[in-house]
Length: 568
Image (cartoon, rainbow, N blue to C red):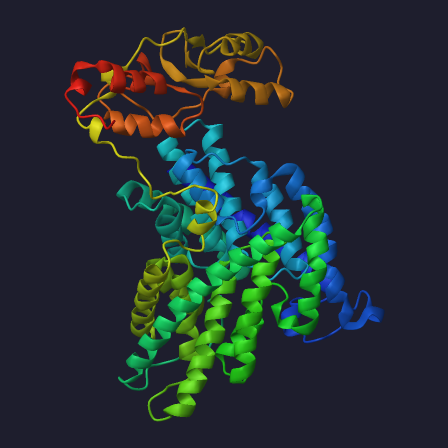
């Protein structure tokens, strides 16, 4: 609970700092608070360039953040959320602390220099890295580490958008993908704490200031349903275009990766010169569209322009989120649909703005396939509860259409392209009913917590699996030390006499009674190739489990396993 509160507070402070960085770099590189609403204005810092400065702004920003990302944290490239999902699902919630710093600077530079991306992906990655760092500092177990990462993600969303409920459900539905009472409670604590800090800095008002909208006629629900279906198609189209343009950039680029954002920034700048409304996040343009200030043709142009600009920004190696662009695309789609419906059926169709709001939530749901988050975040971003029923109907239909058209979401497709399927669980029939005690073997010689790192390095170098248990002087289990952790700590300048207990890590606990299938899942995600088996109190070391031990049991015979059919 204390850690959840601390992570929430840290995420709130991080959101404030990140927003300030974006505002600072936007003012520096464009000369305006938000250039997307400035038309083809000149940059007052370089007035002699006129509107042509936008060709150079993304390139200059890319020249700054490209080497930074390439050198210090390549995870900071792209939209961020898939990396957090992978860390939670496959790496026990471990995220390098430097990711928070690099992601903050890279995304702020990218957005400030005209990158047509959002800030939710970066703040999720920043908050998650903070939660992971806190967890590693106090050496929590892996299951708690995952919850702390989700706390950081929720806190970042809550503070950035003044949306505590949306932060909670974003973390639960997309990051943890698991609703348990304990994790939900901790994530709520972090989100509330972060939101309080965010409101102290940004005020207690909805993120988007829009006039109230209501449903004019029951027949409108048919129009809202049709909009939901179209939005689902557009959400999938956005996802596919994003990765097709990224593939095209990968195919065409032959230079060093650190220079890619700068050179590609010139192409993005040319697009911004034609359509300056694509500069940065573009919330003022979104508000103008929802309030009915644009013609139908221009709304469609902005929709296509945003898909292209966001895809290009990510494709050239930019850093930023895809949540805000999906809202922007949805607003353009909804406003264009509403204006068209108003012309065709003026007696039924209501205000254009209502369709714009529903389009925002529906396109996000079609792209991310997170219907609960989509409903709640639109309500909190706008304060518009009066359209909650049509919003829910459209979002459910958009989610269904998205699922029918595509197996993956805008987040999971990035991982699948790397060969990672978060939903895949290997068949466990041969392991049914077996426990870790079935294949447990004698534990290797443990390290004392007071063992100097130099001596521990020597022991780990000669260990068969690169990991050893660490016990205190009374034999109480403290965690495991890996060759990688010791090597990284020594490389970072730690003294040879530093006790190995300082780098001991607590993997998700496996006891003698743990189901073997569950123990094997834990072993797959653990650092090192071995895992301790503990007693029920989780304080005493009983044995050791390895991949080799499981294989030997499967194919050479334990009595329990021999009774199970093994596929040939």
